[in-house]
Image (cartoon, rainbow, N blue to C red; front, side, top):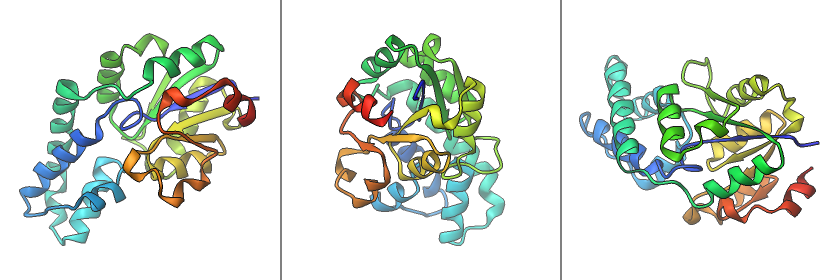
Length: 218
């Protein structure tokens, strides 16, 4: 029986992916690296250290510069998200939906605790969260399931009692690896990609989720 919901954050609850792309692009330009949109999307959902390591290795940049690059990306992203990122459609609806049904509510993100707290305050959901978990200091980030399992543990829930909402493929893999039901809400221009078939349900926006869909997932 499903009684717990765990949300990803970036790109699902808040339109922060453009901010992360800007922060990443501005940082990588210092090393004469320019990513295509496709390259950006291929690594969506990775933690910043893994993201920097991936592209430094790909473009053969000395990894000795990685620490400074990671700090630059994260500080720029926090500033940009707090300044201009907007809630994704349906955030208020989906939190009310699960609160009315007495679900335990958690948030599990690759982002730092500082950013999780800042976004929760910006969205007005701080008091609605029963727990949140960051993958920042974990040995592995998404697509490893640890951050979802940690969040479920904080909520006192079995993974089999959890439904997870994600927008990235790396996050989807992490949720499925943790044995949670997963609803994916990808960016509209990626929605027709056949890879989303491994999700339990695909939506265009959070407000499309219905009581009947919850019943079927349960």
